[in-house]
Image (cartoon, rainbow, N blue to C red; front, side, top):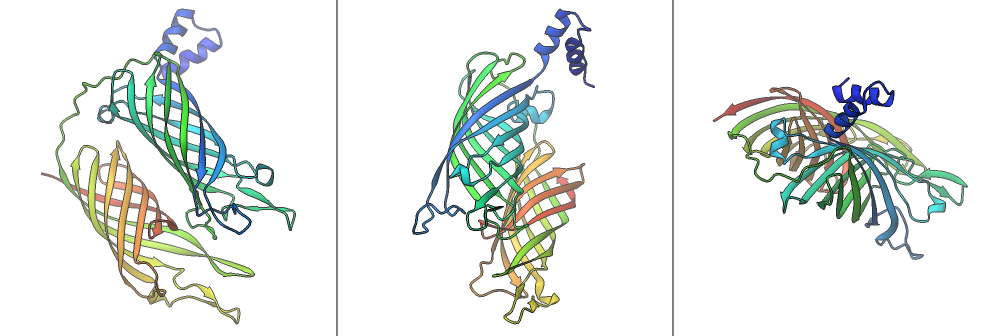
Length: 383
């Protein structure tokens, strides 16, 4: 147990003098934060907003968030690179349209807060992003008098990104306000994948358990040496396909990918990459014909080759990943299908050589195709 935690327990059990208790509480960097986010559910979404079936933006009641986080103390290199950022975890309650007809989804997530612009000692501009899980996406079907999944599945992924102005009003209290965007979907693991996107203003109040000093703007970043990196790895996942809608027939298929890339670590925070994917999609051409016979493309037609470019934003051992590619060769394609694909997610550097990743691969830039888990090897050449 960490020293300040031992002291806190002792304080609660009255084992330590008051002076020791006060000193321990004043030295820790934890905080609690609560916020509200009224927003708009953007089209296209699973909620019909007019009698004629039109699908328009829907205003929803404020989303309530409760978070616990920790400020970094500058003892690690990446703390200084990011201007002593914060990280933590939170819970939220999600309001839905026509509340009496729907369940009340609950969410659990982690977040990372980066104060990338210091306007004054007390005023900062921050960006925050987080990932987590969202569940209880149910609504009442008036015809069957039973609850059904709103987004195609009851359990979904939650991805959040926001930009805020943060004002340190007192050493213990900070106020944040800005714009928040949240995406929720099952990543193509269950069909239909009826994800929703919500955007709106956010206001939050943060209470620091220990006093926070005004932000320092004179921290010099450590020396940086650009480098080339060569990566190779494998990824795999499972996707769900609706082969026929009436009656609904679903099936699960494996998706596997071998990737190789050359990338340039060109500045403290970022890397750019170019590479190729060799992909096997077990769901290629999957359908049920009029005679109730299952059909999909032959094994040799389920392979494809893609070329991609990407950006990787480095946060210590973690990095946020975005890649956009073109499927230059496919054994089987549907007429008028898009060749563009994207991959976005997280990469974790296990050590100097080995990395792991969790990402979502999408067709085009909107429709999730599969959730992928992977690992690989990196060779770095400093020069």
